[in-house]
Length: 401
Image 1: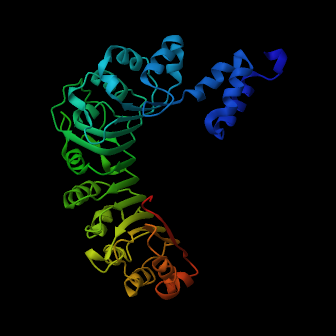
Image 2 (image 1 turned 120 degrees about the horizontal axis):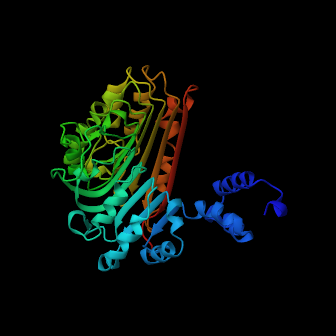
Image 3 (image 1 turned 180 degrees about the vertical axis):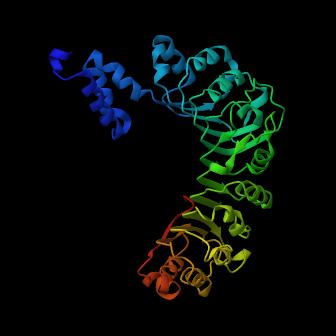
């Protein structure tokens, strides 16, 4: 190889690494792997770094078993695994166990169930041993759980290197830790936390769960980025408790998917991080049935933050179903009043995006009216030299008829 290429293998490796960064689908890397036998290993570390199993993906647990049986060294290249547990995975668990036990250097793990309605019974499935092996790898820094029923929080105790946790439709049980416990290990120090629908009780339990030595299971004080979804009053209360422990936030995202909910209490939630918070992003679903405020109580919360923040960016997405009414007047101007008063010295960018979902029977009168808002309700924001104000309205079909 050295005579044919006349390039040191170290240089070739760097070239392939650079190629892989922008090679969508790894087309170029795959071509390189076929060019020379000596390039195969250099390419495989990219081709098998990220694996998705099941749910219409090219890989299934069966193909992974066959692959690692033929080339067990490939397990050393795997850094990211997205495993959708399907029905057939319950039926022959023995080989699943041997497959997953070969993986030792995983950094990112997603475990999801094929049925969002039923979910994976965490404490009573025959894949548990294999899943715990992956979960407790010392290299693991990112974990995402989707549609998990009765996840045992104590199973997280050994995950001391975990930095990012993403939960979606997860219920938990606070059972006593039955795993080997090293008291010299510090609690999990998360840097990023995401909670979607169906996690309100889980959030509450994580805040109050302690290890056997009395220390908290998770230390939220180092969280920099948080993303939460308000689904009911219970979830809002649990997020207040969780965010009270977050004192170094720089980025916060809030989704309010139901018009009946508001952002009341938002200022109190982010108050512990007011000296570090720089970016707030909000997505709001609205209609007129639940009041006259298109910002779901945001402006009153911004008034409470005024004068004691270092916020640089505020992004607001508003989602509207045109089967419901939407006010088009002075209610929108409240945001202009809230943000153009003194007290926002660090503010550099404000973005308001309105998304209208409609069916074919609806005309574009609402969209046209809302596009006029910068000239009627956001005059000061639009002309503010020190702040970049972005505004947009787009519409799309909700139904295919």
